[in-house]
Image (tube, rainbow, N blue to C red; front, side, top):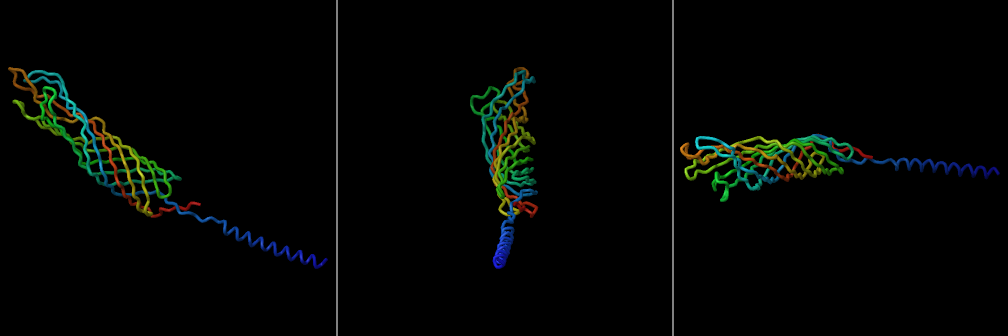
Length: 274
């Protein structure tokens, strides 16, 4: 009986010790290691290059007037749609804030460009115009201030963007001299404000550098530019012609695709995720 008690006690000690050791091993192995996940939170500065396509359409309008050559009513002629394209390049600056997988940000950019379009009237125009009258429009820069909302998968960010767009447009008109009517030339320049929307994808190639592609559509509505004065038919004995004020009424919309590279200022681009 005594030997049986000693044997049971010894077995109990061995089993208890093995269980404690096993539990200790399991506690060490079960502890998870944190995974490093990229954080989009922070501010950045960068550059971009790309292409832009512009479409313009509208009309040339002449107001009713009374002058030495007599009186006449208002009249106009349409300007057909004209497309233009240009290389664009510039820079951007912005800040992001990440909450979970969602990324919220604001960005401003400015780019140089040089798109232009011209039209020359042909046969069939209203009597007061003549074939050969020409009109042109051009722009040399653009800028925007936009909000951004995106969804991130670690180092990949898909986003949409929208906000206000700014540009300068210069319009010119040339009413040619013909049949005793004098030539008149005029130019008008305006800074325009419009809207812009788009979408893009961005990838963090390192903790500080990101590369991306963005496409945007921008519209400035219908804008009116001074086109000078048009010499029109008059009635004797007042004189052979009279002058009437003219305007170009132009609708402007553009589309662009840009490659973008950004330097993110903060170096703590990784966060722990269990």
